Structure formats: structure tokens, C-alpha cells
Amino acid sequence: MRKQWILAGLLAPLVLSLGSPVEAQHQTPNQQPTTAQAPAAPTGEVVLGTVRIPRSVTADGKPLAAGSYQVKVTSQEARPEAVGTTEQLERWAEFSQRGTVKGREVVSIVPESEIKMVVKDAPPRAGLSKVQTLRGNDYLRVWINKGGNHYLIHLPTGATAPSGQ
Image 1 (cartoon, rainbow, N blue to C red):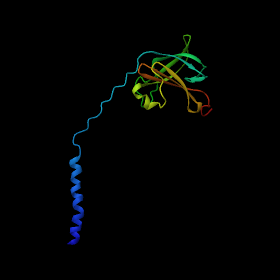
Image 2 (spheres, helix red, strand yellow):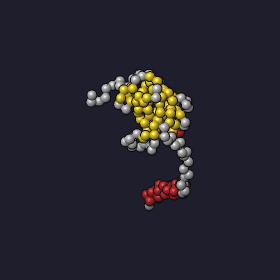
Image 3 (cartoon, rainbow, N blue to C red):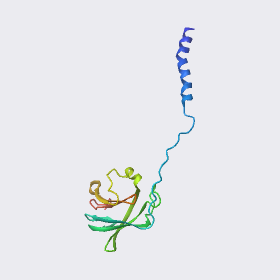
Image 4 (spheres, rainbow, N blue to C red):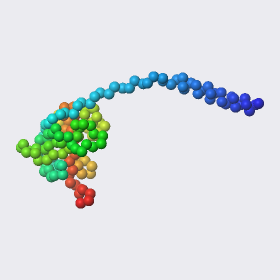
């Protein structure tokens, strides 16, 4: 009989505690925070400005010499679409000198609200650009901040030979 009282004494607090968490649980769904809509990607052509490429790079597999270039986003989407990309956020950018297109490369358009999730560096101020050497000197990043969007273009420097060559 004594063992039964000890067992009942041990189980009673456990049985009583089982009821309280269930009673304390929130029964209605939590209100989800509202998310601001990202600015729509620009449509059509967008002139981004002039950038200085400090060294020879590759754009769309072709050489692009060092120099100053007028950069323009075209209305042409980059194909094939990469998994996870949003419509109109991967397009082609053209690098021109004196009205002649010298090269083109894919540009990623990132809304201002998302840039910290994509790039850890400090962005250029609105209306400005910066050109950075990345990843062991293998890439040159052209970063332009214009109209609430960031435009990122990555150009291989040719510092290392592509695999298989």
C-alpha cells in the first residue's frame, strides 16, 4: 500500500502539470507581419551611367578591354532562367563606348530592401557605382545603385584558366 501512495505522490504533479500547458496555448493564429512589396523591376532599357573598368575582363565570353564604358540594362531577359530567380531580375547589360556596344553580360537586379541579404559589403550611395575585385582576383563586380535598385554585374578577369583548358 505504501508503494501505491508513493507512486501516486510522484504521478500527481505530473498529471496536474499536463493540463496547464494545453490551457495556456494560444488558440488563435498569430498575426503575420506585413511585408512591403519590393519595387518592381524596371521595364525596358535603363541607362545606368558610366563606369571605369580598371583591367581587361571577359563579358559574355568575349574580351572587354580596360576603359570607361556607358552601361545600359536592356529589356532582354537572361535565358535560361536560373532556379529561384524572379521575372525581370536577370537581364542583359551592355557596355558601350562612343555609341558602339563593346560587350554585354548578365546583370542581377536587386531591390534596395533585399541588398543586405545578397551582398555583405557597403553599397554605393544612391546614383553612384563602384567596381570591386572579388574572390581571389577572379572576378570584377560592377555595382550600380540607381532608382531603388542595385545592379550587380560580375565579369571574369581571366586570372585563372577555366577548368578543362
